[in-house]
Image 1 (tube, rainbow, N blue to C red):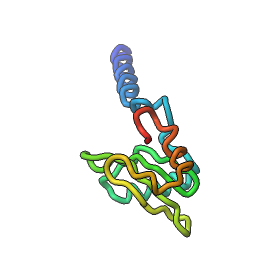
Image 2 (cartoon, rainbow, N blue to C red):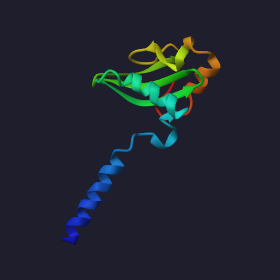
Image 3 (cartoon, helix red, strand yellow):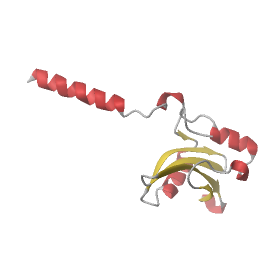
Length: 119
């Protein structure tokens, strides 16, 4: 019985370690004030097919890593509007056009992502 418990525990450890995202130790998925990250994340998740990989918020702008269904992924840019609401201003599949964001903000939004993600 003890041998069975040890074997199951070993399998649980292997499964847990194998589910850590690649590059997870080289950056952060969620950056910025928790309320802003949650608001942007909620907007992305309004479409049930979407999944959020990460959100970086700097000032009135946010950059998100989004998985759309099982076929596509991309990064979306959000801007805070009046009333502290967030509005999608650029994105789709692939890399967004960051010319809609001031250059100093764009650099901050793009930095600090896990390896292989970001701009």
